[in-house]
Image (cartoon, rainbow, N blue to C red; front, side, top):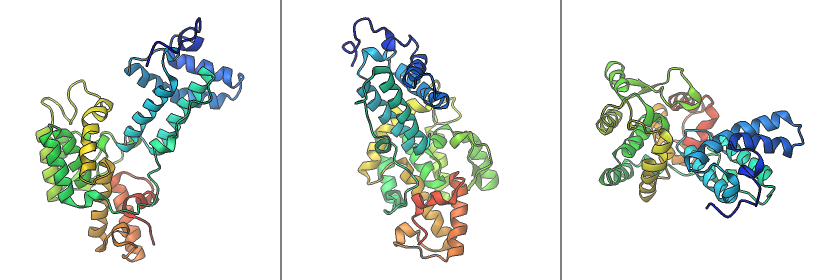
Amino acid sequence: MTGEYAAAGSGRNHGYGRDMAYAGRQALQEYYGGGHFATVATHAGRFGQFSEWAREQGVRDIARNDPQQLLTGYAAHIGQEAAAESLSAAYGQNLISSAQVVLRAMTGDDSIRVSPSAYCGSRTNVRTESPGSLDRSAVSHATEAMRSAGLDRAASVVELARELGMRAREAALADLSRLDREARDHGAVNIQEGAKGGRTADRWVPISAEGRIALDSALAARPDGSRNLLEAGETFRGFVDSELRQGRELLKESAIAGYHDCRAGYACERYKQLTGCAAPVVAGSRQAPSHSDIEARSQIGAELGHGRDDVLVSYVGGRT
């Protein structure tokens, strides 16, 4: 991808500076004519994440790389992070949009383009299909395939998502020994590490017999000397790009859309436990009385770590 894009005498990052993040800000200031300070600051702040990602790919000079390929690769990476719920779909779209703006400003090429929503679709859409992970036999098929492929940690992420409603990031970063103690002492676990937006409020999730099995499997899969599922020196991003990416393909082979689908499976199962009725997405419409539906959505939203009940439509279906 490198070597053929630098114009003669253009200088590193098209002459805007050796440091990519700094160069991006300089290009934005020129692009906006020295004004629009808030817009420049916003795009420049987000572009810092693109710069970090590019550096991890060994890219330090945009002028010596294909900017369209860079943007496409970055969008795919952000899409994976959104799918793993390490960032929101909306924020992911903003990150991609800002990278696109800066690359256009830096290169002068307005044809550089991707669709942010194609990589980070909104999770607040009403779910219309029952989650594949609601079928525990499908989950077992997927996790058995993962373990056969040596992806024991990815299998544990699936099980923790399905049985405790944890995001992939939360499952990977959870202090498993603490969860083990809480499960034994309280019959519930407090989801803290890896929570979205750095939230620290208590988030207690009841632990079922299946949840206990999932936690025991995660403890067994935990690397020696680690509190969580990550190996020494491994980042969550590295885990996403390696083992979780491989595991996702095996999930799809079992008709499970991804790790987030496992949270939807948890939500639908909890909805039935709390209301006595199948979730709207499973039944085809809301069967539970309105007051029971509202209470269940509030409880499940809290267990999933969502501050707004309306987000539950993307897990259990609509209210009608």
